[in-house]
Each structure stands twice: as C-alpha cells, then as structure tokens.
Image 1 (cartoon, one colour):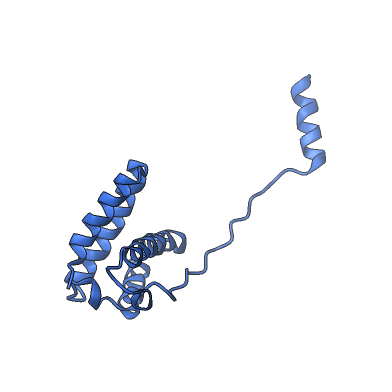
Image 2 (tube, rainbow, N blue to C red):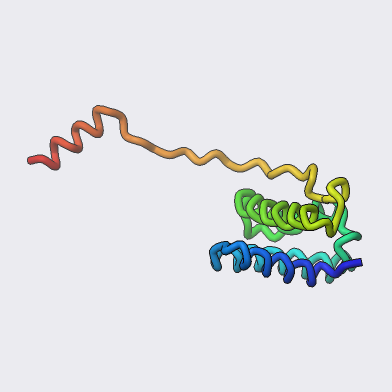
Length: 131
C-alpha cells in the first residue's frame, strides 16, 4: 500500500525532472494537495489503492457544493487528477483498470459567446481612425 502523499511528492519530482514550468507544477500540487486533504479527512483514505471512481465523484460533488468554483474550474481539477493518475499507471503504481479517473467525464460548461465585429463595423472603425 502506497500513501497518496508520497505519490504526490513523486509526481512533483517527476514534473520538475521533465522541466515543466514552475507555475504549472505549483498549480498541480495545490490541486492534488487539496484533493488529498479531502480524501484523507472526509473519506478516511490515505492509500492510493483504496481510491475508487465513487471517491472521485464525491470529491467533484464537494467542489460543486462549495459554490465558489465554475464547472470550468472543476474540470481543470479533474484534468489535474487525470494527469496524476495516468502518471501512476505509467509508473506502474496502479494498473490501468484500477485508474479511478478512467471513465470520469468532464462537467458541462457554459458556452462563452464572444462578440465579434462584422466586416462593415471593421471597415467603419478603420475609416474613423484614418481621419
């Protein structure tokens, strides 16, 4: 049985060795530490082998219930967990079929509407600025 905490440290070291950007690593570690804290304190799980898809879904629900994060932000957390667990599979800490993120899907995000100018508005703007 391997402690989640140890694997987060291993993951961080690996990201540093691969030359990942420090801000990226810091953000990943922040997200993983927050997930690990929830997993240990709320679910009572400290070993990676005990983490199931249900536990991941409970964590996602917890992030939704906080009300302070958009689905886009929660999806970024899911993405970090997917990268972490894929690393664990690649390093053979867990088997592919035991990856709890294998079938977890992203949340639906609101579509952002970007207002653009039409050709006439662009031409009109250019003419005004040339005067």
